[in-house]
Image (cartoon, rainbow, N blue to C red; front, side, top):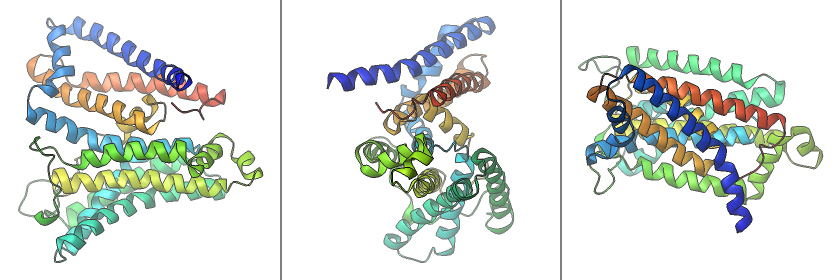
Length: 348
């Protein structure tokens, strides 16, 4: 038990240090452009908890971040640098929307699980493609996932503008999905989708799968050294492909839950770059699925807090983009160094 606690402290030391350094530099920047830096930081960090409506928005913002970040941990543990979360998110959202609209006549008890499954499959498909190309042909996954992001964004833009566009509404939005399959809210928190509970449970379940099962050990072995894993009898290539399927499926589920729980339709601009922010959350969590839950909550707090900060002070919300970029730099550099030293296979 003491060893596990020591490992935990060692694991969180780096991310907490990166957060502290980033926030300190951010405060100095705010102080240089604002006469009320303390108020600005107060709004940034604590305005999410001023009311139930603010708290509901905070949980809704965290939900897709948690799911995409947890999916990314599967890919990274398998040795795949998955930067395709944004495209996988959009694929899941559009698949759920199209399925829900086309088969709206089905009973809710049938339509709901099938709509969720459509979203998961949409995202999983975009995860499967780079996984197969990497394992079978040695194609760089970063290039493929970036390319698929662009394809997914353009394809969904075509669908929402030309095929399923709600002509009675303004902007690039689809028809509403049937109200009978909308996700219920969390009891006591009006406006907060129950999708957050699903995301939190899956985050903890993913920790069990990755670090307490034989399959998870094989995935991590494949990510550490693919050839060695194959030499000792592990179907490492298959584990990598499955990890990417799961990563894409989690992002697709995030898109499905957004449509059914928050937007109730597909909106072309619904994502404030969730894929990039979730990548930061995964790196900040040291590619650990349970820790990704907490880093995603931190980033959701920052993203929503940026809007409250801009309303209360003259500090622009783009400050959070700067802080996000700085954290990406710090954590990516640290992650790269750890990969080179062969230390990324540990767990909390």
